[in-house]
Length: 77
Image 1 (spheres, rainbow, N blue to C red):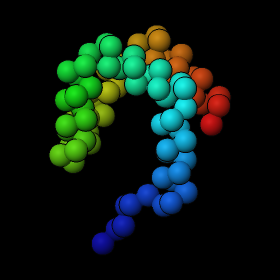
Image 2 (cartoon, one colour; image 1 turned 90 degrees about the vertical axis):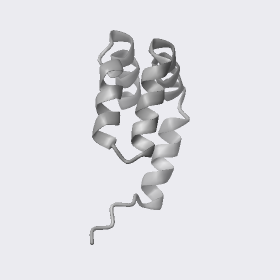
Image 3 (cartoon, rainbow, N blue to C red; image 1 turned 30 degrees about the horizontal axis):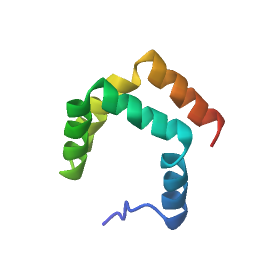
């Protein structure tokens, strides 16, 4: 059986990413844009329906403001 759990290094990188100012801005943008949509995506992910959660989040990541924040995140790993 394939072990798809992330390594400690991957978890640490994810935590640094999630706590960055840009990630916090993106989270706030998602919450302001559609709190119910974000809640739905989180519920879908918690139930293991990652494809539905991804689709819910992608709608909001397509906005100009989200794209700018994502660009900043990519430039500041």
